[in-house]
Length: 127
Image (cartoon, rainbow, N blue to C red; front, side, top):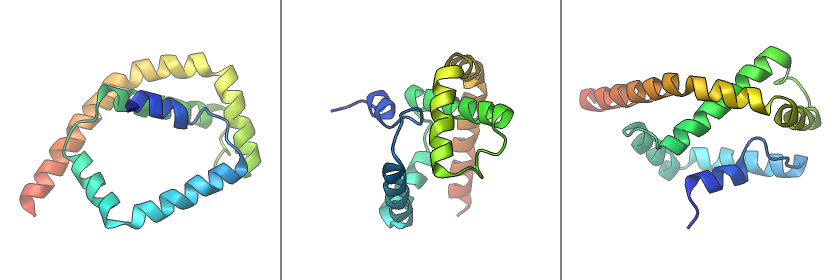
């Protein structure tokens, strides 16, 4: 069985995927998000702190977003192929910067994770 990190590396946002693969992945996630099983899984995950691997993945995602906000402000409005190209450039050019930012933001993300669990447990008690 694959560990989360192996799976994450396989599905990493830095992996170059084609336009068709992106569309297919998006449609699959859109369908999954509506299912009750997926909603229940999300609710269960809110009640426990994420594993260190998942926290690291969140930190890398946040770091990538910071780089995008700094160098590619109009990333969201770009076409699909442009975003693929930008992802390739970011992976090559700013990979080291993303690693450094992710390492620094780990503490912040761990605190947010603890707060997320507290809020979810409090809201469950109230309901």
